[in-house]
Amino acid sequence: MKDIRQAAHHRSRGGPRRLAALLLALVVMVGLTGGTALAAPDGTKKASPSAVTVPASAMDAVAAMQPSWNLGNTLDAIPNEGSWGNGQTTKATFDTIAAAGFRSVRIPVTWTDHQSATAPYTIDATYMARVKQLVDWALADGLYVVLNVHHDSWMWVEKITSDHDNVMARFNSTWSQISTTFRDAPRTLVFEGINEPGFANATDAQKFQYLRELQTSFHTVVRASGGGNANRLLSLTTPAGSPDQAFMDNLYTTITALNDSQLMAQVHFYSWYPFSVNAAGGTHYDATARKYLDDTFANIHKTFVAKGIPVYIGEYGLLDWPNHFHPSRIERGEALKYYEHLNYTARAIGVTTALWDPFAYLNRDTLQWRDQALFNWIKSSWTTRSGTASFDKIYVPKSSTITAKSLPLNLNGTSFQGLWQGDTKLVAGRDYTVSGTNLTLTAKVLTRLVGNRAYGVNSTLKARFSRGLPWQIDIVTQDTPVLTNATGTNASFTVPTQYRGDDLAAMHSTYADGTNAGPLDWNPYQEFNKAFSPDYPNGGIILTREFLNSLRDGETATLVFHFYSGATVTYHVTKSGSSVTGTVS
Image 1 (tube, rainbow, N blue to C red):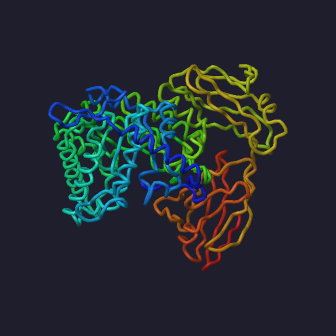
Image 2: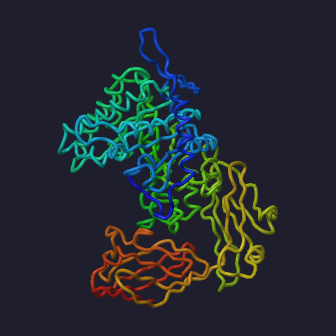
Image 3: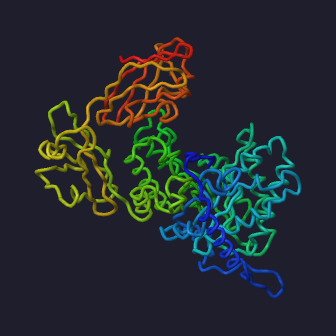
């Protein structure tokens, strides 16, 4: 995945703590690299032994790597390890990952800024030693490791279309040096030829041609280096890591042509795009998003797994969610349903999944999960299903008489066990009823749960099922948000907003002639946090500079703000030169 950086204020480690970590690193590196290779009778070195016994079958070996985690925005950061806010990795990072139940880690590495740009394309020895140190730490924790060539894919490999010979020479030299360095590593180390390869101004047919050449050469270079590389697992991918069917078909052709039983296919998955970024109306993990995942994973199984080729989903997640430094673009419960569905489906078809973690899940400074409840949900989905519901909130309008509210349940193969408020179990028949999969809370219990009816979350319930984690349901007092007129500039404009207990879901933006207004010109629903963003603490909706500058001068854009309660509010915005005026419909 390309750069998703965290906020600049999230600093890397420094001072005495960093010095202590570096001293510890030196001690561990010496201990792990000294005298680990075994001499064969002919004087060559064999691969180092590992505490982990790797199955002979590639399919079984990749299965043993489940679940997996990415050390993102670290050695792949540009230009240096700490450049994107994650500081200097210590062995404690891998200790934490192993203790959390992960069985493998993917260590993305960008080599460009630590390698000469001309022949012989020498990789800096200090940098190579640092990469080896992290790999050795992870291996010492009993983890499989996937090591790759990462952002180099778009920094210079994509120029193969115009500078073929030099790119191939550099690519081969890079892998020759990596192969030599790790020749004697145990088979728990896996090589991945190239991350999300792209090719400048190339047709699909040309992409296939160039990628096949790269991956065939990668295979040849690694296998020719001997030692543990003679039967090391190698990971081959598609253009951009995409699970597009034509791309996977081409990868299948490449893998079968190499006639090597120690190969695995790798693709990446970030959900249906409108849901992943909350654009084009993708506010919920709905039937369209679920079908996209089901269809994609069925195709992965049909193309590879059913034919005996193991699959590693080298990256999965949602695009820029969670991002704890910005308003949440995806509603939490909807995201939980996605993770539950993805990991269940991965288990069902027999593929290994690697969570992409640029900084969003594990806090690299404290080595604590930023959102323990979220991580618990992901971890539970590795082994079992959990029941969910159509939403994780029940809205009770303050301006209306309280009436019974219903919420459809998604049992996911479980059975409903009841509702709890804290340690108190609600009474079926009196507090709620269940008809089929439809849960209905009575007006009487809702009256108690909303209390004095202050706007916002008044109470929290948990629906429990026969297995998996409980589903949290917030009882929320809400009324339709109130927006007011405002003026500003094309550099700064905020719509004053009284949210009144509601949360912003989407913004629909059009001109009077029906055309779309905003940078997302192919759909009227603009992208959350890119065109608009809620400012809950200060009572506003920020229209971004990108959105404002995309507006036609002198033409009024009609904005319809959608809220998760189902409420909508219409607003008009007109840009005249550098001035912007907003009025309530």
